[in-house]
Amino acid sequence: MATVITPLSSAGQSGAATPPSLAGAVDKNMFLRLLVAQLRHQDPMKPTDGMQFVSELAQFQQLEQAVNSGQDLAAIRADLDLLAASLSKS
Image 1 (cartoon, rainbow, N blue to C red):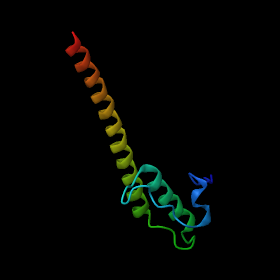
Image 2 (image 1 turned 30 degrees about the vertical axis):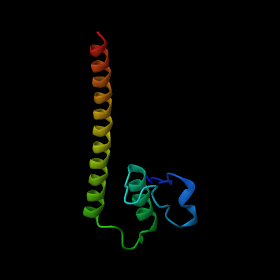
Image 3 (image 1 turned 135 degrees about the vertical axis):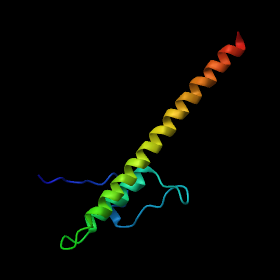
């Protein structure tokens, strides 16, 4: 079964990479764009080494987990701030 990978945004269709808004900032979407570009432009006669591909997928999973952990911690902090505010008013 063939899987079709489509670009995440139409910004990169001109062939030039769009620089991130902050110098040196790497986010999930940028990582995915790089991975998709790598897959799209690889030579079919010399595919990417399987171990390298698995390593990149593992890096993406780690990035995803880090982002999710950060969001969870931000939600916990917001809840604690609300709790502290309600306790200080009592």
